[in-house]
Length: 131
Image 1 (cartoon, helix red, strand yellow):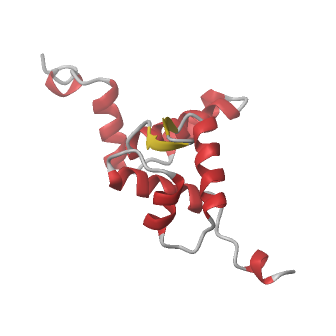
Image 2 (tube, rainbow, N blue to C red):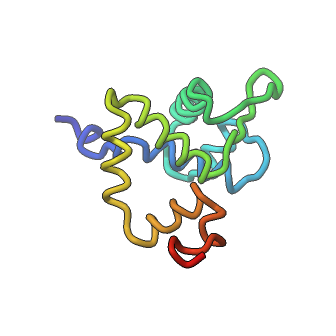
């Protein structure tokens, strides 16, 4: 096995780094500018490929800048996490079981938060039998 393969980054790490650079910038960035922000030794062509793939997935948008493009995030980090959760649910043939297992593994605090998000009025309703 070559040394390059031994030092491969975990799946998604490069995309996460690119997204972090775009979020931190707050303005559209060219692939060369993203490469400079990452300061990781990645080739500009690699950064361009990552940005193109993120664009194909709908995670980043782009605008024409000269002969190339400048890229910007379409969603904030929280929106991207929600999108990933939906993508995983869409991949599963049994959505109900997947959701049930997800909920069963929530911490009590997360379960309470989810209940509050799903039923925002519940916190203001009297408990059953105490009306």
